[in-house]
Image (cartoon, rainbow over all chains, first blue to last red; front, top):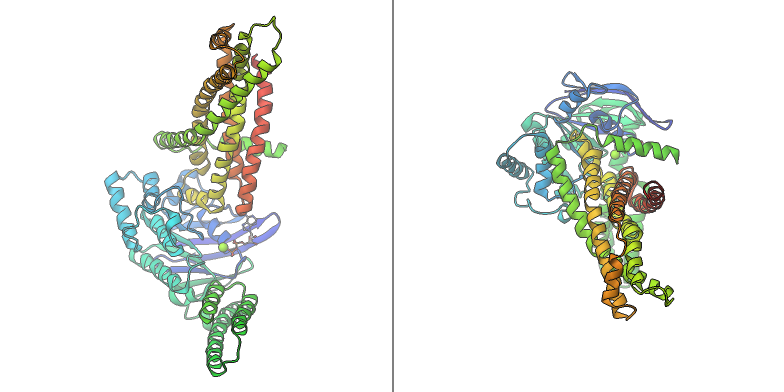
Amino acid sequence: MIEIHNIHKAFGGKKVLDGVSGVFETGKTNLLLGASGTGKSVLLKCIVGLIKPDLGSVTFDGTYFTNNKLDIRQEIRRKIGMLFQGSALFDSMTVEENVEFPLKMLTDMSKEERKERVDFCLKRVGLEGSNKKMPSELSGGMKKRVGIARAIAPKCTYLFCDEPNSGLDPQTALKIDELIKEITEEYNITTIIVTHDMNSVIEIGDKIMFLYQGKKLWEGTRDEIMDTDIKELNDFIFANRLMRDAKKVEEEEREEEEERKQGSQQLSSDEVKAVPEETADVQHDQLPENPEGPAATTQSGKDKV
Amino acid sequence: MLQALGKYLLFMSSLFIRRESGRILFNRTIDEAILIGINSVLIVSIVSSFIGAVTCVQVAYNLNNAFIPRSTIGFMVREMTILELAPTITSIVLAGKVGSSIAGGLGTMQITEQVDALEVMGINSASYLVLPKVVAAIIVFPLLVILAMFLSILGGYLAGTLSGELTAQEYITGLREQFIPYNIAFALIKSVVFAFLISSISSFRGYYTSGGALEVGAASTAAVTNSVIAILVGDFVLANLLL
Ligand SMILES: Nc1ncnc2c1ncn2[C@@H]1O[C@H](COP(=O)(O)OP(=O)(O)O)[C@@H](O)[C@H]1O
Ligand SMILES: [Mg+2]
């Protein structure tokens, strides 16, 4: 269980976190939800100690972390695994060396034990056989998997994921989300996931904390999130839903388009091409924060052409 | 400027607190040393051979007085390359080669959160990443400078004899004239100081990169220009102190 109490953080006079408190439970996937720029990443970094909060405290299973003695903080840090937004794999090392790295640095396992653990972790995230690949040879989804393997390799008790499904297609994103949830339950760890994706909320959100402009506005389970009367949260959900609806509308339009194309042969191919590009632009402008939108539109755009 | 200097000094002192175990740092240092050596040996060889050749040809051109023996050309090539050209020019070349790669590498690690990944594991990233680079540079630079001395004298020999300015015998006589072993020691001291300046300044520039790819490029450029200025100032200070 991780408790945070009254976390404040400002960067050069600009308030980013304004008194956030809360509890993250063990064996559950705790979500930090909010639009871009609301301070989710900063809060996560305050919790793991990469950023020092101006005020407030973080407690890991009853042990005070922020501002505690260095060796106590180090002790806790050794139990922390973190998956970064861009995976943050060490690009001079192979997949295997990346996963082995925390074991080498943090444990006194023998070489054989390390090898065994690395193979186990890679298998757990579905990457057996990719041991010798370099990070540059991996797809986005595979990088995230390696990142997860590296995070759980030293048997972490706390797992932090910053936008684990950003930049992934919806299917891969779902798989990564599910993997994190499975691992959380299997090893009974305390997991905190930063996200701005309502899909994640619906699929894996055991407990959700909604951040808005550096403040916690709402907290609850995924069953409760739909009947909240907080305006900002409803707006956020609505924007997400709007995006999904827009996608649906666009699909319908595409079908209509195809029917029309079949009906009248006079339509020049140029015009047909122009239509999907326009719709793509409009959608992009309306919903710039949606992670899937642009990718999904380009795909459907391609289909049309 | 003063602020940057203070931050640099704090950065350097942070390398020594909360260090990793000696074995890990030792292995990292060997890796870095091999990397620096392999990446720079070719460019250093080319540059120093030509510097020697050009020095020889130009000295010969200026020394057409019949009263001065031709062997003086060999003497002057030796003095100029050992004392100044080999250590300083080599270091300036290495500032471009090694400095930019250190800053670019660390900058990339910083903006892709690899540095944060180290910190989360409880590793002092500055010490883990930078200390081996500085130590490796201090070990490898003098070796490269020795190579540069040898090759520039060889370059001078080839240029001088092939162009017919002087005979092999004259050149070698010149090389042996009034030899002061301290000059070699001085050159090696310079190379150690320059190694420290280049590796630490470039690491500092790279480590404190924030933003994106553009800033990594800017950090690399700043690393090279700052290092070159530091080398030239250091060269002047050392010449005053030690000669
Ligand atoms: N190191 C920093 N220095 C200054 N400002 C920062 C820093 N890190 C984040 N910020 C600012 O804090 C705000 C929240 O950022 P962040 O937590 O990354 O948002 P998100 O919720 O999208 O993860 C942004 O406005 C960002 O500009
Ligand atoms: Mg973020």
